[in-house]
Structures are given as structure tokens and as C-alpha cells.
Amino acid sequence: MFEPSFFIAAIIAAVLGALWLRARRKWKDARLELFNERRESIALRRILEHLNEGVVLLGDRKHVLFANQAAATLLEAQLVLEPTESPFAAYTQNQVLLGLISRTAMGETVRQSLEFEKDDEQSRSVEVTVAPLSHGRRVVVLQDLRVGALVDKRRRDFVANASHELKTPIAAIIGMLDLLDVVDNSKRAELLERARRNALSLANLTDDLLRLARADDPGWKPSPKLLHLGDLLAEVVDSLRDRAEQKQLTLTLTTDSACRELIADHFSLHTVVQNLVLNAVNYTQEGSIQVESSTGASGIVCIAVRDTGPGIDPEALPHIFERFFRGDIAHSRASGGTGLGLAIVRNLLRRMGGRISVRSEPGVGSEFLVELPTNPTRRLPTT
Image 1 (cartoon, rainbow, N blue to C red):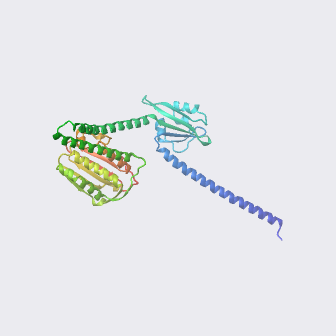
Image 2 (cartoon, rainbow, N blue to C red):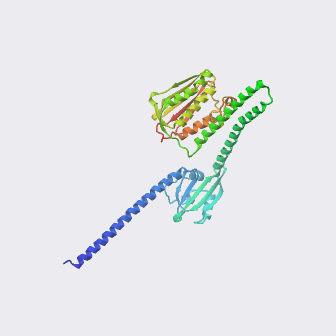
Image 3 (cartoon, helix red, strand yellow):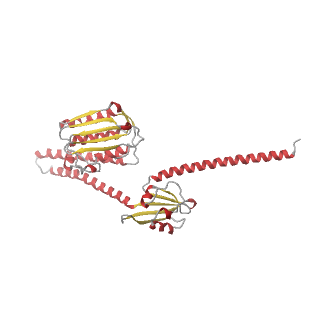
């Protein structure tokens, strides 16, 4: 027969074993939960690092747990990516913000516009939001109102410029059509031709506005596919050869056998090259236009468009990629230019991870150089 003590020991062992297994499962669950929290925290911090708004996370003792680059810039303080024991009063000397934090109760949400004094004796309007989080923590969000004002100004300027550019050919078409009833029959053909040219200019402007909207749309993403670079360049050059020959210009294409294929968005790259070559044809009055592909450092694909045109004035060079900018307004409109072509080129290249640069000498010509990464997931730094 078994001793009672044996049964008691067996029961105790079984209970201890069950408790151990339960504790181990809880320990594993706790480790997994902690791992998931850390992973989510890292992902959240990486997102906050790239926000235009300043974000400061405060602990229950008002110590700084996190501060992104935008907050560091606005507060003239340090970037904080890991939790610290430093109190917020030691992190920043901005007395206006410190006063707001001290007046805000722990569970209270406050939004207020404050004037931050800068070292250059200029003030900056900043909208500050203080909101409660769990476990006694708080978040402070700083938004530079000047940035929003600049965005609004650019938007208003764009609408005003677009309206003006649309109104000009429309008014010309209406005026010429109204004259048809009062001029001699010999003049009507000329008026209709001028109205047709203005209608084409209006169509070009509408197309460029749609392309620009597509390039600016945050919801649109390029669809990179394997394409034959030489075939794409030849397609663009052949489509513009007649126009070049009408001006007695020599249009040539040279492709590098080392970069026959490229992974890129076909529509975007075709638009980029077509706009650059078309600009060269429109502005070059005599001489030649050369389109050339080559392989740069680290496998970067380069596409150069060179012309013997009038060149670009050094004062205008920094502005040529701005929307509706024209170095020669009369010549640009006469050739059907909309002032949007280079802005579209720059935006599309940025969306594809590429970049563009230009070298120009008045009276000699210009060279536009497009650089694209062979890997579409890689982005080249903009210049």
C-alpha cells in the first residue's frame, strides 16, 4: 500500500507543476506583450520623427519621453528619441510654453496660439495643443502657423496664375470669333487660324494641369515595370523629329548598351523625356539637340538632353522649375509653352526617386540631366 505522505507529495508536485506551467505561460505572454509594445513604440516614433508638426511626449512627472525634430527646431532644443528623466523645464527655456503647461490640469485638453520669441528678435506664431494620455502622460503638439500660411499663399498664387493662364487664350478665342461677323471674308481664315492656335494652347495648358495634379496627388503612386530605355527614348525622339526638321534642327539619339533596361513608371518617364526634348526643340532656333543615355556611379541611369539654344539667364536659372515661370514669356506663349513643363518633370522625378539638374550658358546652350536609380525603392537625394 502507498503511504499517505506519498499521495500528499504527489498532489503538491502536481499543483506546483501546474502553477509553474501557468506562470511560464504568463511570463511568455508578458514578454510577447512587451515585445509588441516596444515594436509599436518604435514604429510610432519613426512616424513622429518625420512629421512637420512638433511632438513632445511628457511622462507623469513632466519629464521628457520623446521630442521629434520639428519640436526641437521650434523650441531650439535637442532631439529626444529615447525616454529621459529630464524635466520639461530643463528641456526648454520657452517660458510661454512652460507657463501653459503649468496652468494645464493633468486631464485637461488645451489648444492655444502662442507667440514664440526667437534669437533674431522675431516672433513666431505657434498653435500649441496639450492633451492627456494614459498613465498620467501628456502629449504636446506644436504647429508653426507660418508654415500653414505659406502653403495657403502658394495655393492662392497657383489658383490665380492658373486662372490667368486659362483666361488669356479663352478671351482671345472669344474676341476672334466675335470679329468673324464684322471683318471681310479674306480676313476670316486668318482669324480662325489664330483662334485654333489659342484653342491648342488652351488644350496644352489643360493637359499640363492634369499631369501636374497627378504628380502632386499623394494617393497616386508610380507603377514601376521593366522597360527598354532605348525603345522609350527612340519613341520620344521619333515623335518630335518632324517638328525639329521643320526648324532645320538636327535631333540625334545616343544610347548606352550598358543601360538597355530600367525599372520605372513608363508614363512618368515618357512624360519627363518628352517635356525636356520638346522644350529644347521649341527654344532652339539653329544647331542641334542631342539625347543621350548613360550609366553613372553606383548604377544610376542618366538621361541627358543638350541643345544649342539661347541658354538660360543666370538670374532665371534658380526659378525654371517653378510653376508658370517663363524666362521668355513672348517666345514661350508663341511656341505653345504653358510654364508647367519643368515643374511636371521635377515632380514626377521626385515621385520616382530621381532628380534633375541643369547647366546652361547664355548664347551657347543648355543641358538637362535626369538621374534615376536602377532600384525603384531607392531614392536619390534632391539637389
